[in-house]
Length: 305
Ligand code: PMM
Image (tube, rainbow, N blue to C red):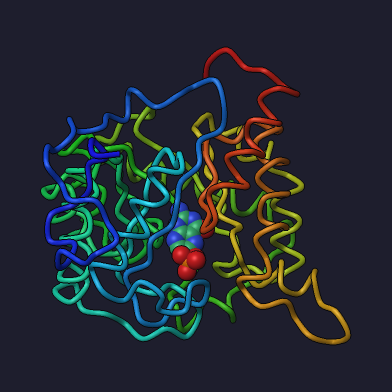
């Protein structure tokens, strides 16, 4: 146990976390496994995320949560400092960076591969400086086009998430005739802007953006048509964890399941996404999803991606 690298600044000696004695070498994107779907664990350093309700509002608790996921086997830890739930208040990039940078720094020193979940290019840049390896642009370039230049200059893998509007407007923009075809077409349009900025195809990971300007039925339709996203020729990330459409599915006696009651259904979606060849899933509860990807890899072995 004593070699378990933890983070500096994780609190007083009474902290339940191990003390960092020796930083681990930085994890590298290139070293991620390619024979199975990857599991990305979520750490929201926010007071108001829908899914983990401000559980990790301080750096210490966020670092502890990230380390637990890392030690449990998560391949990537996704750190975010602004809630993306519909109706959420904006957070300034300065406040966002104050929240996420110490957490990223600690997780990277412990040897984790970290992605930064943000819509702000300045926060993505600060995160990369702190050792994050992946940019997770939840606004899919719609908020800050500078993200494209940052992705091009840093060469960091870039998650292009489909979204319409912002946290305030997205619910009213969920109008599609054919949701899968339109999401693919809109992602292709943004992808072309990334190419024009100098981002290479291998850097791009696409994400259907479940819940971002999609209603429950549209989320299911996207999941049923994941193969259409494959047609763009990039890695695909699926982020269904604890989202509202799962709560609706699991309604009992008129009561929607609470976010924490949606983890089993999330693991089921992981199994299906992995079986269909998704590159990664983004989840709050990493253990069941790690098992699910093992099951899928056994059922449908792959040699490389
Ligand atoms: N969902 C949320 C936040 N970030 N990033 C990606 N790439 N894909 C998603 O689906 C996604 C995301 C919202 O969920 P949370 O509040 O539980 O983090």
